[in-house]
Image (cartoon, rainbow, N blue to C red; front, side, top):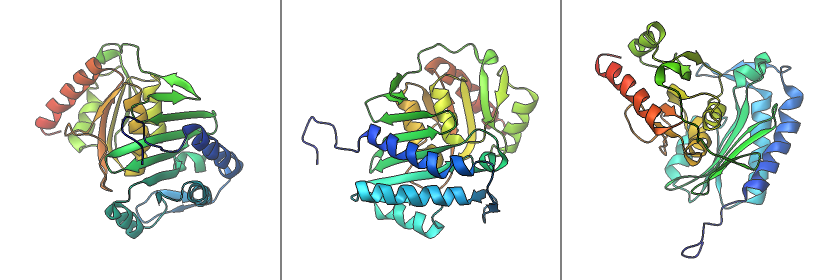
Length: 276
């Protein structure tokens, strides 16, 4: 336990970064675009690299920090439920390969997402892009970093109609998706296919606004902390906190600064009220 006034003795982010970097170099990069893929029961893609990365990090984390429990995306649904219900004082939450479809197809946008969850939310978040050797990391109330340098969203976004948006259409309410397709309020739109990196690229101001209709806990646990610590804004479509200690998917509305976030939220709220 930490003493009053001192920060909790959570794991060191630099040590965690080196652990994840080494695992990704040895487990993900050698298999990139040269793996057999399988379809899971929910229709998503899984490869041998997902399992190799999860097994490696589960073992490494248990060896170094045995006091924390472990939840990985590739565990069974029953294990996920048990771990959420157990209420452990600390829980690692891992997506061993975020962007598996990209990875299996040879598309160079995928990463590893790892968060340490404590009873009141994420304490640490780390997202690593092995192809670009970019490690995004954050410690609660201590800011965000990119490869050790401070990461802070400071630039004022352009007006909404000139913004670059990242939008995942397939998980949105149907009428809202149609309205966005027919009458977008932004300047241009992208979708990269790896949620954790999308959070981080927004924090790094590589685009301006973000919308996703449903992310799992391991998709947003690390990225949402990194974005918050970088000073950007996020909420759900229902205007709730994105993070929830639950397995049900959560929607995401986010922007690099408060003013453009308010404009984006207002535009979306109006369409949802009218049937979107």
